[in-house]
Length: 451
Image 1 (cartoon, one colour):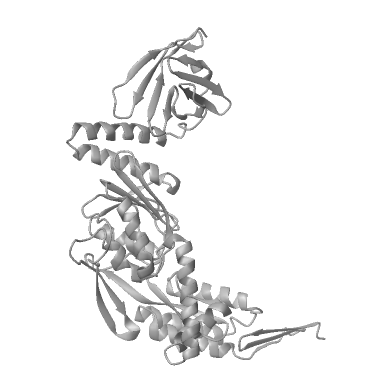
Image 2 (cartoon, helix red, strand yellow):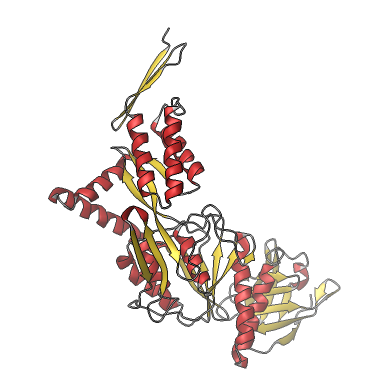
């Protein structure tokens, strides 16, 4: 007795499933789709042996009825993607149920011969370009840290390299005075490989540098890739680079990390990256599905290899991703202090280093249990203990909350930077505070009230 009937139309795939005692199921076009995936993988996947193995196993599993219980497009996407990745070992490969993207890919393919499609494709490109501009081409933060260390956070590498080039140049200009750079890729999941010659050109050069070879087996194509020398903005040749990584640093972010590391231009600090080195392209399967097919291999020119798929890149200094920025800043300052001969600059780096080291302490930002002992007036400085820490008023200006660096040691991290080191308390009160100003000699100030 038939208890229910379900029908799902998936852009040319008609899944008709009915439940009975025999649980009979029929699928009209699934075989054609699996065969198409199998053939695309066999012909285009980056590595031939793996391509044949993956194609054979996917086809064999279908013919043995392994996918007979699939009842929705989302389940088909999940099951086949999991299988393709498990067999091939590649984390990029998979099928995607996304009719809107499929429509855009079809328009892009037809734009070469159809005027209507050409107009629609141009509109799609303009929309994507506007979205990239509003997202600042992946640039999340640019800072100049004390001691001459620059910081650049990129959460993805935008493929609109010509449109995004001015934004990247502006970021590089803001880092012009730096002596070292921290490149934060902890949240970066990749991007379009077209940007590699542009971005790497700011760190490898000044002449064009052969950094990798792009190989496409399906085209029988091998192309040497060189950094661009026509870039705008400040260049950073020779500066130490510290790349922050996490377990979600992926794809093109790993490519940038690997190439800079291979040229001895970067120290990697953080966690092992995710492990996805091959570049992929979308190939339409039908009106609703497309295949993510890894068919681009990038072989580094120095190592003549790339990081292992699925294993990623191990850091030079392994720390939790959450603490990687603090650790990188300390490492950068220590190395700069060892190299700089100018006494004034060394002093400023020393100041920044002392703060950076203190901030690594997990108790640094906690409320000091003895904060109430520091309450009172010390010449022009008035300190007040509150539930959330120690507050300062200078020359009767509004109070600001100080940063706790260590018990009895506080930082006023505004334009005029100061550290305050309180003396040991007597009768529950500190009698003096040593004020250390950035770039100045420390001075001791005694308590000027009667508390």
